[in-house]
Amino acid sequence: MAAMSLLRISGAGKSFRGLHALSDVDLEVGEGEIVGIIGPNGAGKTTLFNVVCGALKPDTGTVTLDGRDLTGASPDRIARAGMVRTFQLMRPFTSMTVVQNVSLAAQHRRMSAKRLYEHSLAVVERVGLGPWAHRLATELPTAGLKRLELARTLAMRPRVLLLDEVLAGLVPAEREPVLDLLAELREQDGTTLLFIEHIMAAVMRLSDRVLVLDQGRVLATGAPEEVTSDPRVIDAYLGEEPARVDS
Image 1 (cartoon, rainbow, N blue to C red):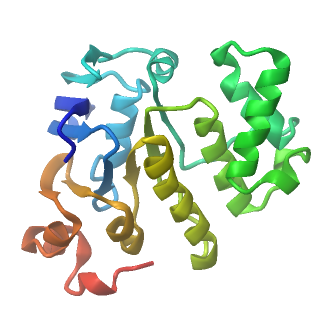
Image 2 (image 1 turned 180 degrees about the vertical axis):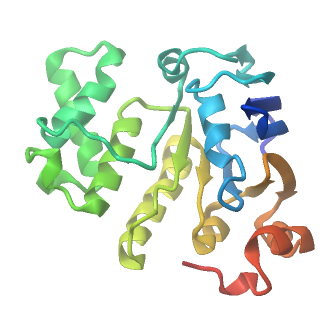
């Protein structure tokens, strides 16, 4: 892990009607680090993202970004602080073009109208949607909608980007450019990435570390090779042949 901790989650807990969705979750993420988050369905992965990004207030614990306490802060405030996320369900503004959707996400940056348009168009082109920039978002195929969701977050120039199954629904040929872009975000922009993913090939390729959740608790954390060979992780999530879990 990088020497400086940028994001720190300490003792995070969240319950729903007595069900512990998260229990005493700790995670420190260094600046520029890529952390994959895996676990079975219902393990608490998306709940963790919701707590970190302000959609849910934790029952216990704290969330700090670069030493700033953001526990229970609104999603808008957390986004302005530099931490944004994508969502599994893609809901663009259907009456707007692709570039207009991206511009709307970036409006808080207080640019002139001309600069906002130029910035948004550059982001659209960066994610590979240049030919679709002036078409309605509803015309995009699934892979394009995934890229638009990513573009809307990148337009905010995040320091920390949380990705919730950004590869879901994509065929292997569609995944590769997205994975290349995510690696580029770290290498060129220094963006810190946390990503929930079920495609183990992507987790192994991108992650510096992997956090495994099971029943709301941290089951294991460490380098990808260490985690995927951990008998507890194999038993809880990967099955008997983890090396073959790649889709």
